[in-house]
Length: 208
Image (cartoon, rainbow, N blue to C red; front, top):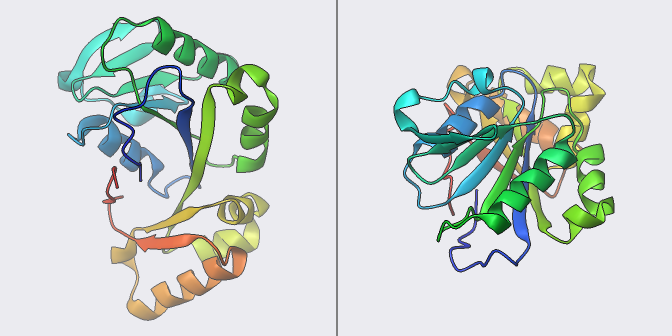
């Protein structure tokens, strides 16, 4: 999911990945993997509610100003007011920190009905953000059993697929091979350029 940026300095733009997908698609499971696994990446994750993520208290090594620091070097914070304001505060903390190893990447977990377009546009038109973050891509989580119907019923689902650079088809254990082939065909129709990955329990490589 993430590229190695271990040599990146605090003055360089921080790669930012937007994680989208309908409720139940597996976004929170993937966020938990990012925050709990030992993957040698220091990632700052922005979520809507800490309660939704359910951070394991045994992994918390520090809490400061709405930012939870985890034992693997990752950070987790919630949106305070406006997403852009939250990002600016996070970037300011990164510039001011005395930590020799600042976070190297930002992942934003969008709400289930969020279209990536407005979020990405805000990153591009805000000078304070555009100078300090670099849009690295959009990852769309899709529930293998429900995504075809969601694409038919919800414009937001189609937008999430259309903006994706990488689509993770999750809960593949709930479908047979023919159904998964139909899912991939529907996704390709909505976005012929995105990579598609099949998985269960959001078991994707956090770093690649």
